Length: 363
Image (cartoon, rainbow, N blue to C red; front, side, top):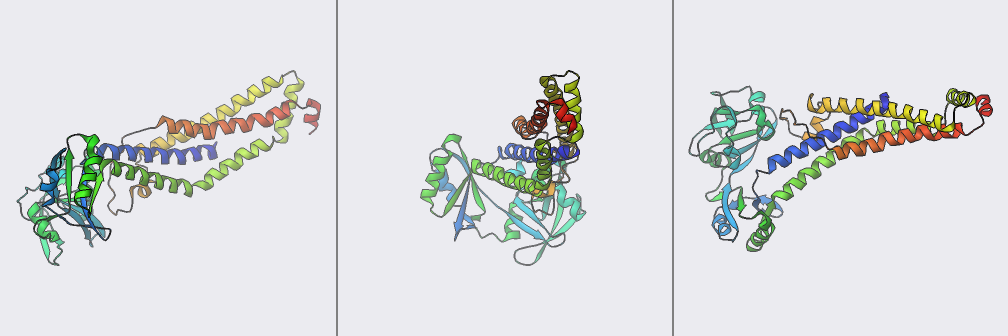
């Protein structure tokens, strides 16, 4: 029961956490742009000209196009990367702040930060923080707002500053942006519009929202497979246990079946008894493992597995996952654990039950 429950616990925790992350990512990405247009040079992401926005707006089916200014900043103080966006970007349209405000587009040296940064740097509203610009000098910013913990999955490592400040901070050349977000009138036409943009701008890389969602699914699936590989020893131990049951019964179990046959039990009675015995053990172990996995993931924040699936970031977002359970995955897990265990219990019992009782009791 301990080995069985442990295997189910590990596998169930990985499945619960992976599925919950995928669902969270899908829900969040539903509000992302239908199309993101980047520019590449030598296979690398390059800044894009804001003039492309007018040409993209001229493509039939495009309802909106706007340049975005954002980038990454490495903080040597806590050795972590921040995501810095301008207050004109879409992410700042969510005013879910614990307290304070988002800097206006034309504000100077005022920022809003994620709760993870506030914890790591021990700062709050009204505090001041110095960040090194791309030119090598330092800009002193005043904290105007801190994002609330409920939005931490999106905002843990986020800094929002005005468009004026972000251009100065990263040294954006005039008329250049990080990328362009495009909204389309009919989402079904997004691949067609992406093809037109790619044809008009050969050095561009249009990224569809569906591509981003599939990438997240692939990343979480790969990481969950890595965790399962690390715990393959426990799975092998369970297989050995089941195989040991399937290869034959112990002398005491054979003697028990022989006695039951001698006092009048039929073979079907013995098999029924062994079936209910195997079912009770396997279902009890399965339920113990699943309940422990559920508590571990959704009440204890999956502290054993979370760092692996969240990624490499130093500032891990602190949040409670919404319980998302795939009954298909539970059914597959039960099929791969409960049914083989019951079969490995019944088959050797059947072999002993059809043998002469006297021969069985003599060993």
